[in-house]
Image (cartoon, rainbow, N blue to C red; front, side, top):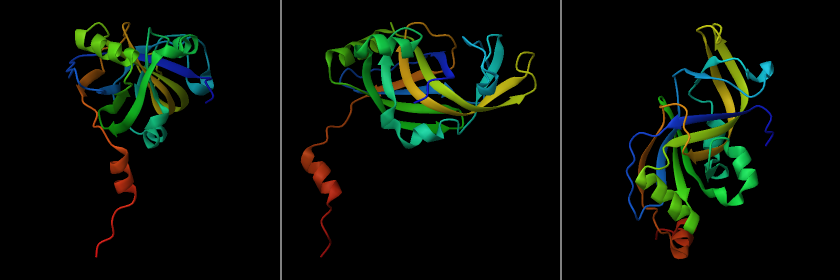
Length: 202
């Protein structure tokens, strides 16, 4: 993936409901239809990035491409600036998205946590409330400006490639939340085989 134009956006978690036997974390990763004040590390007018503070929002459909292939989106833990953290620490990847669902109010993600010491530690951090933020890394593609986003208008992101979803202790905005953590169903090889080759009637 071309990482030019990478946007890092963080949101605060609200309600956390953890089932100790659970392996799936449900989050609203990105709120839609709301404007937040943001600033970027570099100026790239073609991608709508600016080092001057501006108002930004995300539109329904912005992550349509990622929603078709959720397994390609890793679930990461670390500090804000997650892409760099992933490069420096391969242990930061603790799972992947099992599903991505675009709804009117945001992008909802069901994240499958690895059965590993790192995955267990992640669930414990959520349960204890130590990790309170969700961050997303996305490559900006297209946008539309509604007025001047530097002076009261909004820059609406209309298409972006989702690079990762990150759990962080340094959130920036209070618009996203972990909804629940639940048990991932165990699927045996026999069940997979039966689903793939159903018995014919008659």
